[in-house]
Image (cartoon, rainbow, N blue to C red):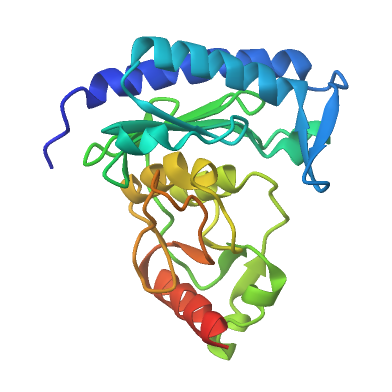
Length: 264
């Protein structure tokens, strides 16, 4: 695959910016940051806002012609006329962040024509940095990563109602993993071979998955919708139905489950 012009430069920009945004967030981690509720149910903290402000200023100053889509910035549809768009979650897994869990990350991607051209997950509390470019593989702290080769027992995450719909032939083989508040980090766990697969409940947004999707794909896995297709990003619609993530035969089974669940 031919890498798009500027993709290596964009990846370097994302890595540097995500590293600093992660350092900003770490200043608040475990220090009782101020918290507000969005829509009455979703927490956002001053750490989210501080990291978002840094990313927006840094990335758009470097690429003023790119669009901007972030969980913590009001969406401006002017981005739809941009060739490329930054898709950002300054802290993916805010609930876990506030609870003192380490499995949260800064998620940043560059999207063109609906697909990610560069993706970075910076997970400072874990001292982990993931990144990928199309056709170049996926990396964790500089080491290439791959999805796990499936064994007799498989580790699966996601909502219990979907896990419970897995075919009976798989039920005895599954171990359900503990809940991971950061969806991006859960996908990274599949990419790095620590778990096998996960369901994603409906209403994941672009900023939750755009970077992790590319990392998972380059590690040999995939993220699929009920039609068996990968999600598209940075369009007019920025949320998604139920998704399945994993690899091999198991991924096909998960994709079948979400298709049947949607029909039912």
